[in-house]
Image (tube, rainbow, N blue to C red; front, side, top):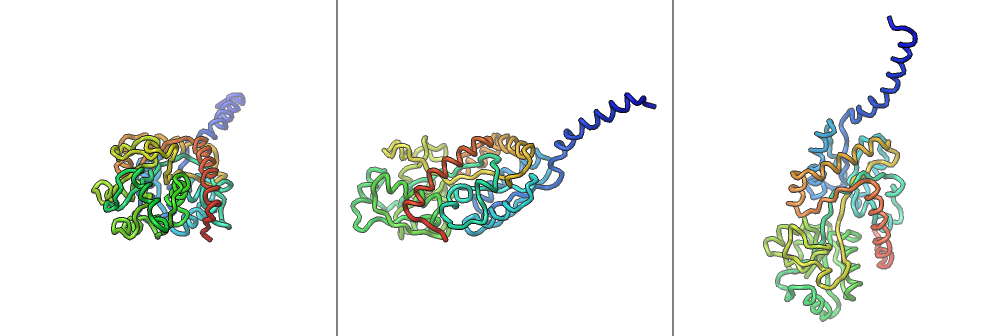
Length: 323
């Protein structure tokens, strides 16, 4: 029978062990990953590619929950109201975490107050593409052609307020072009009308434009990245063609409800970064035309501030509103 002294020692050791056991227990049940887009699209595929190996490492399944609509606001509102316990994740993108606060007069959530960053996921580089029948093969020829068109030139986007729309507005201002916005309900119909010649050009993201660029059905004039893309090595950057410092992406990151315990957010962040450095995962995402962007929490937070500061003035100057 243990002495009183040794019993106290045992109880003290057990008490010290409790926090360790509590930390090790997370996650104890499946995790829900909210994707604010329909199943089968690029955002959905990214989440599923990342969730599978991440779930194996965490020892629990990750269930993808698609909640599309209202420029990601339906999914974002659902995640913002979820219990902050580490069992609800959200794919947050350019709109959700940066632009929507300026595009909408009223939102049911606050990107800054309701979400905590876990880490960045991927970037979709934006590429300036034209219908191949257009008599231009580089940015200089495109600029001369565009300025010669009476009444301005129409351009397609997946929708008002999209990263593609905002990037084109910045592009327009830098090159002093007269452009007319033609918004569509999604990338597919926008691309289809550029292919058909109804609209002469657009900024297409690397996933939506991948197959048509590779097949020569869309002519890529320039890519809005600092260096040439691994996926499109023959496409010159817009920077090297004279639009200095011009970068444009659609991007995605992973967030959780704001009050989620720090140890759980840190574990998710560490596992996300490890997953995005897995060569098999990187290959699958790069084969889709994506840039993989593993980052820590603080780095993502700084990035979000930069994006809000960049996109806010563009939206206000051009009076872009979605409500």
